[in-house]
Length: 390
Length: 90
Image 1: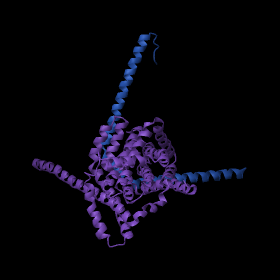
Image 2 (image 1 turned 45 degrees about the vertical axis):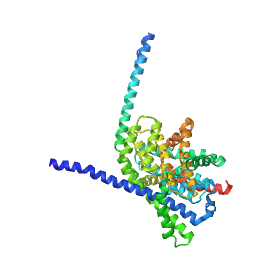
Image 3 (image 1 turned 90 degrees about the horizontal axis):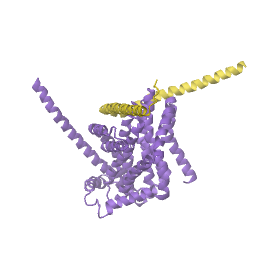
Image 4 (image 1 turned 180 degrees about the vertical axis):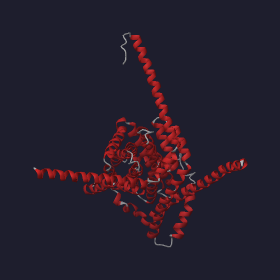
């Protein structure tokens, strides 16, 4: 009997570790497929639109429309990683970076719907619901304020576009920090894309084959990111726990760092920000403790777009890297400015608390809030911007 | 009831004693809170699972919201009826 138990104990870790190895292999394969998918979208657009890609996106040349496209698409898909990876693919296919920037900003707002939905599950316990709803909506308010501050600045001065261009040039074009020499991802991604382009879709007319490639790419990204998220959630739970244990009692910077790290590990800001909602709901973590953690998630989620940009080949590769870097810089600058300035830092806290108090008294506030922020307000904004020609 | 202390030194000693006690109590509270946080983090899987029940969350919330809406609508309708009734009586 004793020997049997010992044998089982001996067998268990090895079987667990072999299953882990297998799961890590799946993750690696899925990341590879993600890179292929992004490359497919870029290639598909080039084939389908040729030099007309800019004209194709003329409908979103208005920054408000582009912002709304980002908000609604992300709210519907419930994954900013998916949307930003698709945007990187579109930029590689010819979508102008200036149009992609408001889309990326919109993706930041759209992704916050997931943790708001998670907080609604606490509705039956009043205090728990108040805390959970505030912990969810603090992320929304932060991202909305970030857009209110930075979108007009971007329209007026194009500062993010310039920062992104400088960094992309520095990384790809500069002699000192050039990544051209050691980018092993592009040669790995190119063969399947070329094979699909030449053999599978090559028999079709250019426009049709381009559209097929785009559709296949988007479908693959949707599936792959969902599957990566599920796998990493299981694989990374132990590491996430360790990171969170380390951050306890160490202040906001540590909270931000842990939010960034966990989001990078699970490749999903929705998972990180939704994870903290029930923790805040129990009252164990206060709203002020949760706040920096959710901001870290904003920074950590940029890893997917950066990863996607490494797969792009051709003359537009630098623009794909530029938009991925802009996504990162926008989130980083947002955290530094809004959290760094005490007056601005308090606004999301106060707004989340007030809304949570009102929602506890009348649940229809939550319905009105979700409907207006993610769907009605974007519609009104588009209407106004079209009418006044903003 | 705090007794009145007339000696200045005694009073400042008392204040520093109380401040030390307060600091100790705050540290104790801090440790307790941190202990609870570590305990919650140990159960991370439970919280992670909740993310997968988004549609159940929406459904349960929707039920509560619809009830509140009905109550609100019913209440205002009743209020309207009683006001009408009052007017009729007058």
